[in-house]
Image 1 (tube, helix red, strand yellow):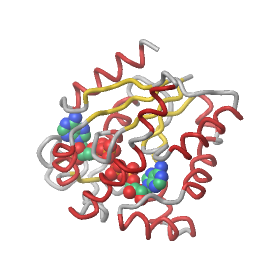
Image 2 (cartoon, rainbow, N blue to C red; image 1 turned 30 degrees about the horizontal axis):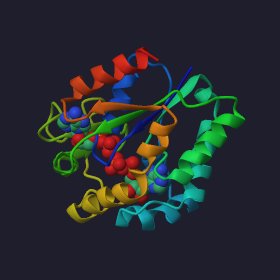
Image 3 (cartoon, helix red, strand yellow; image 1 turned 60 degrees about the horizontal axis):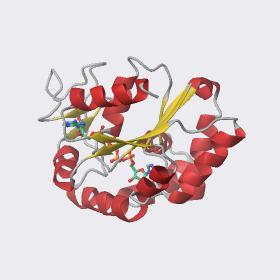
Image 4 (cartoon, rainbow, N blue to C red; image 1 turned 120 degrees about the vertical axis):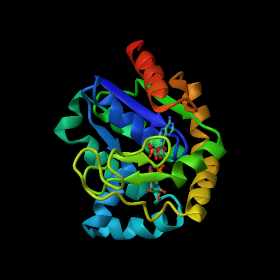
Length: 216
Ligand code: ADP
Ligand code: ADP
């Protein structure tokens, strides 16, 4: 059983690291951003609500986000634990998560805080390419695909997210500073925060995460 949060600014590498953790930690990754994008592509009411916020780089309201993640956590595959990616992003969401896990007789084991400087975040977001079918994430310089423009896993044509424009990227990092960064203190106080040097290359970051989780 492992209930973990991957915490860090947009572009820190949360999704990339969560994907690699699959190889040694058999618990599902739950990404609130991916859940919103799934709802968007299926044109659900939830997707419609979220779109206006996502397009501007703002956070979707807490009640909507918490209800969506709660529903996902209650599915059977999360019984063995979960790696949360992109959630919680506000103190209210963190409190809701504590409540939700408590109701399930569980608690968070650790919050892995992937620390990356703003300049690096912008470089990473600017070169990010995503597979529309499997969600694999590439970077045109730091983690390029083998065949230009095509996913290594399933060959689908890679795309750049609509909210990865320079304006939205900068806004998302500001929103992180204003609304999400206070979670650092929230989790440090509770003794759950583990700091990871996110400036290292992808394998270097993964090695730190593996060592930290195995020591729990
Ligand atoms: P990134 O990988 O760049 O950090 P995400 O895929 O996590 O971006 O999120 C994309 C967008 O989805 C956010 O800008 C926000 O609008 C919305 N979103 C994702 N997770 C949350 C959350 N926990 N609370 C509120 N909004 C969220
Ligand atoms: P997040 O989920 O935190 O928003 P991503 O996992 O989507 O971040 O990574 C953002 C971009 O940076 C992607 O293009 C990814 O390939 C690249 N990336 C992730 N981790 C690293 C790293 N340690 N070094 C260089 N590039 C990275």
